[in-house]
Length: 325
Image (cartoon, rainbow, N blue to C red; front, side):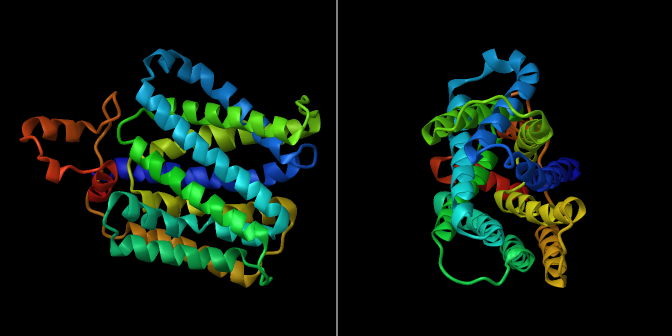
């Protein structure tokens, strides 16, 4: 059965769709707030939305899970900061394309950090997705900008966020990690807002709709969907599915902002979906349901029935994720 892998990857695709509409919500919010204010309010609203569901589990959170969630939250917040600052000195299309470089960085960084073997399908899917994103977003402008370098740093940080989310979800509860991650981002966003000197003002009624979508859907719901989805697929396919955010952002820009979509962008979208098909083709193994402690039940049973592994045969979470792929 592939049901758990399919559900996980459907969750990642839904995450990308929600993030895609988030471009419209951010544009609306930035008419009334500074970037640091938008970041703080979206994470504060997201935390308020998650607390009623996560409160019963707060006493069960282990220190190890807390540390992992803070680490993921740090990479997520830092990526948003460099992406926002970089956008001030580069074009939106270059910003989007350079951010999407994380699709290629994820398998490379995973190989470098964990020596996880890279499959030919994952490598091909990542490259095709990158080509598709180039067609979809590049506007033909030239010249080196400081913002390009800052956005590349953002891509690296987002790649680490994807890698460590997949690694963490091998052993932890998605809701707990989502709550810790969002709380970490809110605290850092508050510090960023105070450092920027932006006032902590109440949201304008006209901007409240955009902020509510960013907080409840684009942050709270999407973060839970992402952490759940990455529990059942590899880092590289996670990055490819999440990279379709750029495609959905373009679709919603056309529908709600009247943007004219050229043929080049349509071809880019087709390449992105081709990348997903390539990365999915021929997958034979999937992950079993998770136990209450986050570890796959089938793996726990297999481990109990098999001899203990020697140190030389120890597998990192990333390696196990590749084998299930």
